[in-house]
Length: 98
Image 1 (cartoon, rainbow, N blue to C red):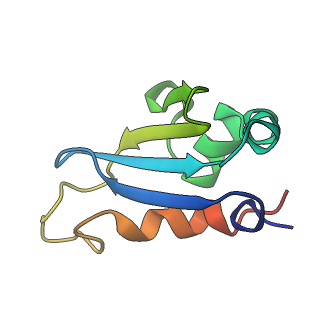
Image 2 (tube, one colour):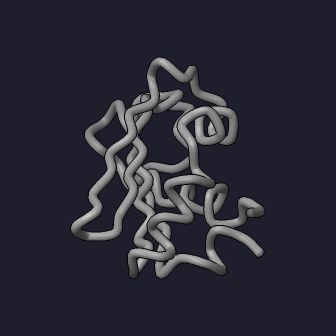
């Protein structure tokens, strides 16, 4: 089973030209509780290959949402940017095995 199999939606997007945000919409309290345990900050930093001290974690229990933000490796729209909108970053988390 993967994260994408368990949650309602995983979405990623730019959070300005220097950051990416990945949203995990869990849908209910049971799934939210499981994702809180499964998706620790260390695991996410390793998945996205970002230093742990640059990863920001936001927990929104009233919405059953987890958010992770981290610096982009290249500036949005820069010469070496391969994902202008940051939309493809969600796939890594969506396919992560539980």
